[in-house]
Length: 223
Image (tube, rainbow, N blue to C red; front, side):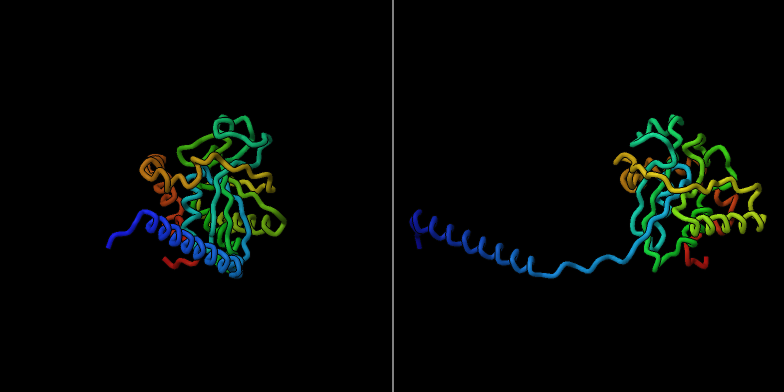
C-alpha cells in the first residue's frame, strides 16, 4: 500500500504528539512521586596522613564511610593551591575530610584505623614525602573528639609497639579547603601512576614494619 507524503507527514505528527504526551504524562507522574528517603545521618572527621591520595584511598575501604575529599587545612592562606601548600609557606597540611555514618562506624574506630595507616613516629613527614605539609595530624571539632584521639595515643605509647613516641598532632579544626579536581579520587582516575607512587614511596612496607598484622586493619575486621 502506498501513502502520500501528506498522509505520512500527518501520521508522523500524530506519533510525535502522542509521544510528547506520553513523556509529559510520565514527567507529571514522576513529579507526583514522593522524594526518596533522606540518607542516614552523617558526620565528618579530618585526618592528615601525608599524601592525601593514599589517605583517601585507605578510608574509602572502610564500611560506613560514604565520601572522602582531599584538601588542605590548618594554615593561614585562603583557598590555597597545591603548589603553594607543597612549597611549605602556607602552614597547611594535606588532609582528607571523611564523611561517615556513625551507625556503621564510630569516630573511635576511624581514629584507631587512621593511626594504623600512618607512621605516627615520623616528625619530618610521612614515608617518602617530607615537609610541613606532609606531617600527620588529627583535626578535632570538640573536646570529646580530642579526648578520643589523645586516649588512642596514650594507648599506643603504653603498648610499646612502636619504635618511638607518637608525634602526630591533635589540632582544632580549621577551614577545610578542597584540593584541585585532579587530586580527587586519584587512585581511581590514575590507578597505574598511583600504584607506582605508593609502592615507590614504601608506604605499605613501612606500615607492615611498624604495625605488623595490625597494619591497615579495617574496623570490625578480625584478621
